[in-house]
Image (cartoon, rainbow, N blue to C red):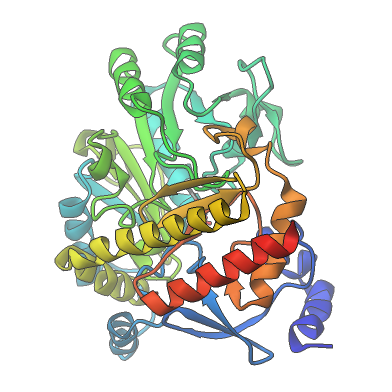
Length: 427
Ligand code: PMP
């Protein structure tokens, strides 16, 4: 038995399903999860001494690759001065000022400890600000595990959600309305049917969580118009796309400015961090400036702030990072398309900047229904074929891959060779 197999067997006795976050268990692709011992640059190293080229990068944050020297140094310097004070610190002010200067929609920002906290808090603030209860979210978008986000679309009938997970009450589900992504008419119908009751519309402006799905031409602009007309708060969940698809997030790239933005992961340089921010007027509803309560003992943690500041300052000052991320994304996806042409395959490859997904379907993927036409068994085989060749992908069809600047042209060539062989092997 390998070390990973032994660890997983043992873990299952003490941790539900053997993992601390479900996708890690490899349920969707079969086999035993790999237990990671360390990581550096473009590589992960497992407990059995195997090396893998990384295409997940901790689900997004390791934009500069693993254990980047700048972040490492900032963390080790900060650790000399204590781990947590539960009192304000200089770095939190620097971090807030920096985020406000980088992200177009953010005039004030509150730090939290995860993406889930960021989205839960943002929606509470939107409800407090508008005095309305309901929220619209989109099928196949993920906003963390807060109760009100774990709602599936009632197919056809999009008026009331039904709980997706046991433990979510019907009362909570009733306040979450769902629409198909990229469908403005469905949103307009929900808005008309719930006039004056919708506090916010929350979405991933580029979706990573049903595999990568791009917003259709005019979709984000259309949402902005509906929100302006109806006094609804537009929230972009940029937990994955923020600081990755552009310095100011996808909102900078697409030119549509939401009222609020949720962020995570990247702003901690890999440490457990999230944040939500937006217009001053809205953010001033948050306690102690205003009546909407939200708090956190470890929020703005000094070590996490040091890591995040090192990462964000570097991204802010180094435009070549984004040029390289674009180049790596384009080369890799162009190469994968060329491989598929050679093999006579017609799978759909969705790509924006340094995020992409290869869907095992020949249908264009613009929403969750399209994504579900993918052959997930074929994806599982592809995943295992790539892993065998030392390439670590997200272990589910319904995820995006995240690239880092640590990938060299040689790594790209190795990934493309593995992609060709794996696609050929699974036919
Ligand atoms: N929003 C989005 C868009 C996400 O992708 C995620 C997690 N991947 C979250 C929110 C939740 O973040 P966390 O896992 O840090 O709670």
